[in-house]
Image 1 (spheres, one colour):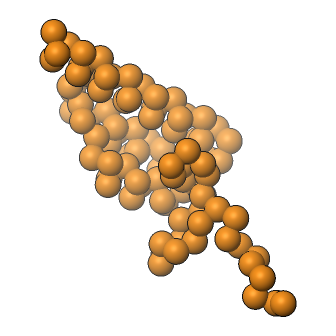
Image 2 (spheres, one colour):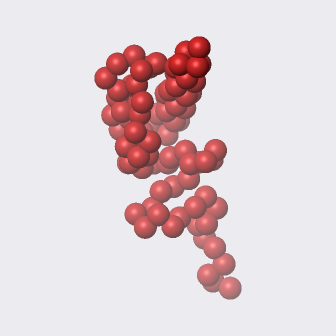
Image 3 (cartoon, one colour):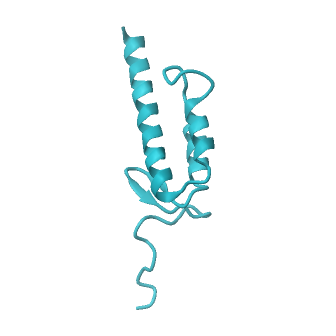
Length: 92
């Protein structure tokens, strides 16, 4: 029974990520969305596929924006940029 619950959880996570990516693609125009979806879907069914989160995030960074911890952010090459950090108080 635990195995069945684990499979249901994996499927729910996969479906949620795919839906999020589809919405992001529609509004933000991710150019790599198909590669991200392929990484999510893996080689089998959604219940058996386990996406590598590092690969998903690497591909998401190629888009205009990415979803990090429940909010949209703009990844920077140095990794230091966070939402709301643009245009700080450097001029004061």
